[in-house]
Length: 622
Image (tube, rainbow, N blue to C red; front, side, top):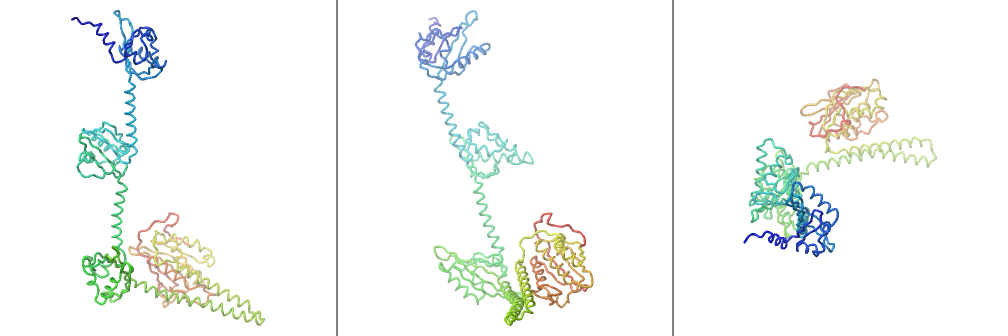
């Protein structure tokens, strides 16, 4: 049977699932298949001879179609585009239209064939797919952990924002392989600089191995953001890899802090001046610190593991046993003092404190802390002596006040007024003296036994500031102050100013009345110490008094009308020097006046003072 082309075309036109229209060159519809009538809701008679514009949702859509058809007619017979169409009931739908030119035998355009497919379901499905992707992206975006999936060929399929941020400036994209991402990361500088290409490649290989060795224990790596991330990777049955990166920076910091605190606690225990010993319930020594081992002159390993009673002299074993047995939930601590003879023949008084560590309301172990209180007891004795001295010297002005007050009252009672001004003057002088004594005592007491915060202090700057404060006194006495080279030391600048002021003021106070006062200030710096020297050409001090002059309330000149003072200035100077770990002495070989030599220890680690708080070395005179 010969091939019946017309029948075939008619069959295709009639049964084609997509809408098919034929339009003449004037853009009027001339034919439509059943699928077209169904899609647009028209009867055939309602469409024939109607303009093609009838099918489009708007003039703009129609004009877009015509423009595109005319623009591409030269190069393409068929043109595919997506347009908005309108059904007979006014509803709008999205359709994919292929328009094809139909040429006559003489190559003139005889019309157009338009094949329209309703793609609304596909668009809706695509929108749902995009919505699902957006929801997934949003969900992954809210996760702080880095998340990614690589296919079996190590190509990146999906990832979240947190995973992207891990690679810093590297713009990772889906479809990139793990090797490409790691290589770009190694070159970006976000992970540091590599000295050689071999180092960079080695780093890249180690990072790539983390992705590939999914069966190995997780690793903790530092990424471009500088934080630590735990790498947890899982291989799926289809060969893909799920990569999870969990930020463990704070956790690692906490673990590191715990480890550091444990080391610090151990270091603290080892460096405490106190003796520390842990004892088990059965009196076995579990731990001793270095202070304990040094005090008893036994290595740590010779203490740990032994019964504590074996390490105690026989006469103290019973009191130790009874003390530990007496500790309980109701009595957690106990203490006593023990005298320990030393190798040099001296004795050391130790206050032992025992604390029970409870477990289920019963002691499981004990902690013994021994503190050397020998110096504390000595200082208490010195404090008692100091208090007695203070009380004695304060009583003198009080006695004067009481005595003259009593005489004043008697004269008033007898009507005698001639001596009242004299009595009042003496009372005022005694009160002023007592006020000076109290003020100086407060200053003395406020100077710490040892300063805790050191600065690098230039003594030349200290002297310069003091001379500015004492300018009036220097001018009134007509003194010449000569300042030589002075070292820098580690100490407290304000206390050192007070020291210099006391020594210079002392030199000006005890001057000779028949000559100009001269005060020389100089010093030196050595490997093991630094010195400050203040000397004058005044009345001098007898060598017999070289120790006494630094004690409280020691006045060599009782007549305050000539040499005023409370006898505490040099005591304050000594306390300041000792607070710096130094010494002060009177140079008894110097006979032209008085020379005080202050020696400071080597300069310790100190914080530099601001530039405007220090002075430069040099020589000058006031």
